[in-house]
Image (cartoon, rainbow, N blue to C red):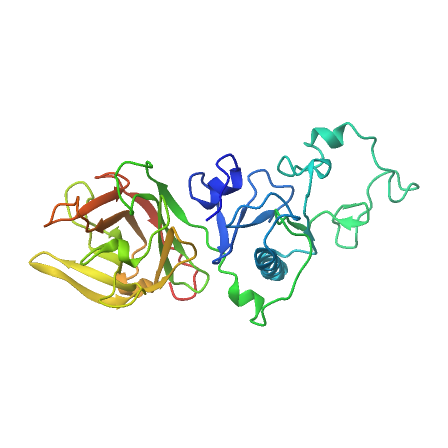
Length: 335
């Protein structure tokens, strides 16, 4: 996957810099702007690095447009938006060399003369019938949707827009890069509650990987501690992706640890690969008996010539006995 080591967006896509992710698919990621111009200000970026609108791959351009439209369609209902701005900056003259800032904080705009009032006789901003301030004829209480590389919609998928917006706000933990050698160096582990009430576990590796890298008996798992203490006890649950006996598709399952035996499968986990480095594992909270809170950590196990034959090579994220707190959303439909 193409990336620019100096690009802030590439680092966010890779999980090296934290961001509040709102939605993602196999080509795009949508996340909250760290310096929002208004409530609901998000950025939509392609997973593949592109210098600007003129250099982006056409399929990535279409994917960003589709993602932007899906988010825009959900904003009026979810956040009460009166309107949505879709903005692209292409080239230094369009301020593409820095993230967009609200006019009051943008030095370039502060140096410009103030725009003439929309209604010169009023001497102050107008208000609409509901008492909200207007500026330049636009209701200020609007939501700015700011895709980083696209300003117009392309051919759109026929599926309902709102149903495709997961509005995920993951809780994540970053892990040190290069702390192990091998294909499954975990750099990010995350948990989130989706809008349909299901849960999603996420593991991101330092580089791209596939099922063959796991080897026989290998797995990537998110360990869930409900009452167990990470520094002294095994987790009650494991949500894992494992290599198949044949083929390339990963299998997913939720396992319950047992004190006197091997873990047993209690539910299926739906595996998806949004990128070559990341795996998502979706499952229902009922599989882990819907706790109000839990702690989680990541683990990868793989087999290789340089790995111990009995245990294989292992990477923990974060390093033991670390674990990250996670609170399940009780307002979700199935939670």
